[in-house]
Amino acid sequence: HPYDSNNFLFLEKYILLDWDLNLCLEDNDCDNAKLETLGASSASGGVLRKRKNKIYALTAGHFCIDTEFTEADDYNVEIVHYQKILIVNYLNFKVRSDIEKIDLVYDLCILSFEIPNFKYSNRIDLAKNMPPIGEEVYTVSAPLGLSDENFRLYFSGYYSGCDKIYGCLYTIPATYGSSGSLVVNKKGELISVVSIAIMPFKNVSAGPSIEQIKDFLKEFEEE
Image: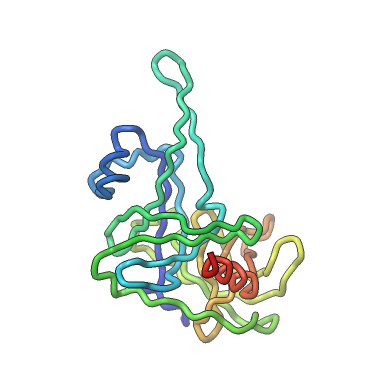
């Protein structure tokens, strides 16, 4: 399997209650915060680059957008929690991440975070072009956070071309939590990011092309 699993990141999103905010947001002590799982979701992602102790990761844009959660208290008054937090879970170490850039047209997001002595994850190289139609492609993901944060599922499928509506299609299975999985070619080079599962097919997913990813990254570098 050409995808380097050391590049893989498991991502979690939480909406926190007030008593967790200072501990996790200000002190960055997310391991000890209660991390109320109101509206929690998960995704996959991978490392783009590392600069000193700061790591930049790529995932699906829809995972990074704001989440609103409403609940009722004892007096049946609705309370809306807007506070969102993104957590990178790497080798059992949880850390808060910041959103650097989102593009909902291409469905891409860049996150940044810091982990001291983060040296085990390898950055990913970008492919020059999309592969020929019918060529085998690969990804690694952890849908639904199955088992635990170190769980990995290896998938392979075939590149099926690009559609104006859905984007570039692959015969790679996807479900909740697969979003953001990096798709690579035979050389292990990035060609796409899983954005959606194409229903009612069981094993068809889609995402942006490498050209769109490059445009997104170029805009990020120029900002």
